[in-house]
Amino acid sequence: MNAEDGAAARLIAERLRAADDRELEALFAERHVLAASGAWRDFFDAAEWLLLPEHVTDALSVLPRDAVWRLASGEPLTTLALTDEAGLALRPVARALAGANPTPTPDQEPPAATGAAAEHAAERAFTTITALADILLRALGAPLARVGTGALSATERRRLVDEQIVSAPGEADALVRLAGATGLLRGHERVFGVTAAGAAWIEHSTPERWATLAARLRDALPDGLRRGEGWIDPALWSDAYPLDEAWPDKARGWLEFARLVGVVADGDPPTEPAWAAPLRRGGAADTAALAEFLPHEVDRVYLQNDLTAISPGPLAPALDVRLRRMALRESHAQASSYRFSEPTLTEALGAGETAASMRAFLEEISLTGVPQPLAYLLDRIADRHGLVRVSSDAERGHTVVTSTDPDLLRTLGVDQSLQSLGLVHEGERLRTAAAADTVFWALADARYPAVRVDAAGDPLPRDRRRVLPDRARPADAAALIERLREGHAADGDTAWLERELEAAVKDRATLAVEVNMPDGSVREMRLDATGLGGGRLRGRDGGADVERTLPVSLIRSARRV
Image 1 (tube, rainbow, N blue to C red):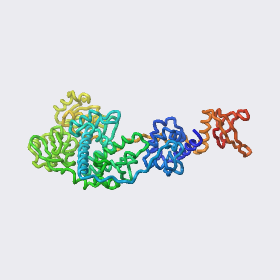
Image 2: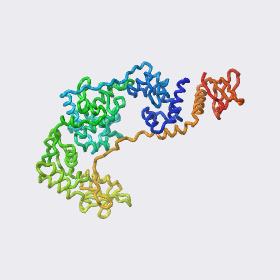
Image 3: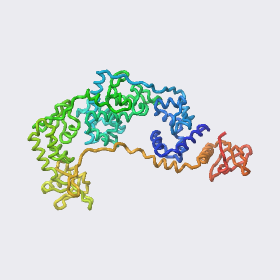
Image 4: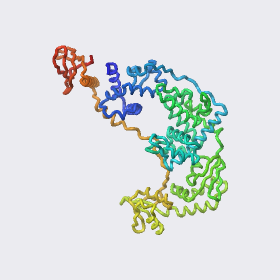
């Protein structure tokens, strides 16, 4: 490393030492340093790594167009690891920018969408919202499998097509990626799970779903696509990261998301529907403008004697979500059908519904009342519900299964499908070491009328819905930061000098060393560095043809010659 690059590394090291932990965590996450930091002892190691040519190139590739323009044109830009105190590019950064000729992002607005293009964008937004809600509802019950690359598995894509949630596998993949980008789904290990934000989003009305999804997409846009609280003209998105060779493909992905959400309409260049303009400028979504183009939703259904419900149009989302907690949707289009059965009603009871609450809801939304077959099935299942009770024995750490029907308990004890639970008869109850929730779900899956109860015997609602935290836990950089702080001496000048001397000894370099003499004078010596230890530098003085040993504490400076 030459003197100028060494000075840059020293500047960055001291800047890193002065930064707070939050700034360091953000920098280390952005530069992906954790995997390479095992041998780092102090901030000088970190600074030298950050300024290596290949890592500077990587850092520049993630800079937005305007930041690259400022660095290349000499405009001040404040950064933690790329610029000097005046905000100008450090020498290693300037070398990496050689030949780059970026221009600032033009200040332009997209053309307005025509009537037909706006109508198509609204239709696409409604289709996206409906399909996305179906995907999230399905993932609440059973997370979606993904492959090692992080993409949705081929099996899941085919299943979503077979269930008529999407029309093609590619559409399923695009919607799951959109849900991931906007935080409604999150990849965790080998599955995609619904986040708390996603579970809340499902309960919204269609306009609220769109407004939330559009706002979350805006918040997720990379910095290079942003302007203030909004975004730049989508026609400029492909040029937002001029030094990233992979960016054009990424830009197409973000543009696809914008089209799916309906904030970008067809056209070349892309056009803008009226409801998207306030969002682009940083304001709130205009749901009223979009609602003019959305299908009319209904809030009533026909309940039929064959235990089905028929919706004469798109059912309002809140009603659809609740109805699907007690019935299986068999088909969906402008008119959807739902089927009630013993398993679906039993699961609704286990999730906290009661016979009275379900009957009241169905009477409220039915155009035909509650047919006798459905009322009979509901009463029969409600009467049997809770016949098997699952509780925890805190004292012994076991799970206890009881029932007022001794014959049913005997059946549970010999049921081969429950053999893995290890149920053992103990008087008038069954006992097992398996967890209470595990026992409950095994009994529910085997279609026994089970209920989970607390210590007082009161029912505990158990919903199959599985919700993940909104954000994955970030990679922990705390240990690295602590190690660097401990290894970095408070006296930066001394630490840097020792580092230069170590490097010179390793390279067998010749040094011009300035030494403070006992009489107060300063003398320069040229030494071929041979060793460093015990606070002393050893080297051969070629001019005097002698070996010298100098206390490091007396060395004012050292430079290679």
